[in-house]
Image (cartoon, rainbow, N blue to C red):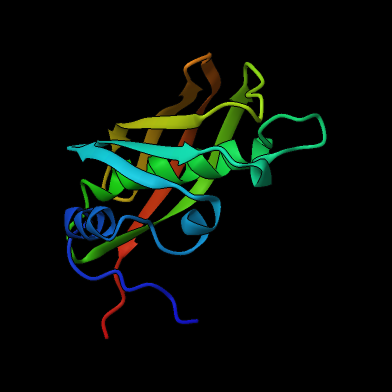
Length: 148
């Protein structure tokens, strides 16, 4: 399987993903959907399935961490043009409440709190109807998109 195409500005990419009904790659594997995005913010949703379970009958922390990584990246994408790309440099996750596997849907929200020339920082939360399950911060390195 080939890697997904990432052509255009970050807004172009997010718009295409939302129109397609999915984010390609790892996010599709876990079931993440682009719910909304705006200048420096994003919201992703993840319907919880039995495949998301950990050994304690809750949503696995890796699902929440993956959701946090994806939503912070989407928030940064809203600020990037077609000559830029990014990579996450670090992700700090604090789990504050277990999410039972019976949880219907997780919602991740992120906002960019700093955007410099080569570094951006985002704050994010993962929640459900039961409340906040995780809070975190991501650092992301902004680089030029390779030509060709």
